Image (cartoon, rainbow, N blue to C red; front, side):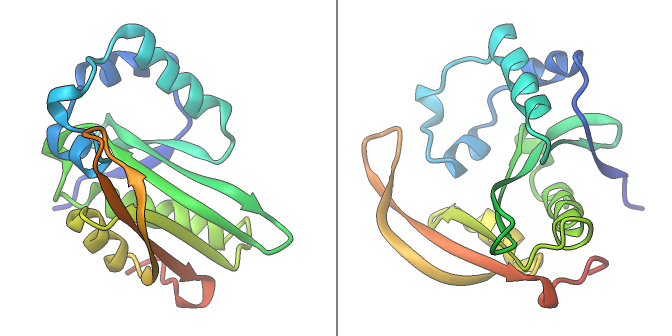
Length: 175
């Protein structure tokens, strides 16, 4: 039986769960951060995380099984071209592979292609982040290009970004 995943506005007390969730090595590697170089999550950083999500009208806390699991947001909104980017991040390695990110992305896409009436949503992901790429593909995104050495990792190395996109006509909310 699947556990509930929902998107919601942040609450002031969410920082407590955010500070307790730090840092997830596989999640950090997916962002290009060497876990051995990661700075610890502090109360101030956790509160700032909550405030950033709260300040963005197109950002939501991902709640999975009643607890804060991460955040998802639409960004770079361009209503003239009816497009936006999507960013998602889970906080704990233990939440990877459970379908939380996939379900959260689909909920955000339902908002993008429903009430916002967007034509397309794009994502940018490190080419080495195979887990995230599989998740985006499962949500219907297709690879549209590659930017070579466009991301500088915390180790100082360069990595490629994959550009992926999804059109409204190709989105199926229930899949």
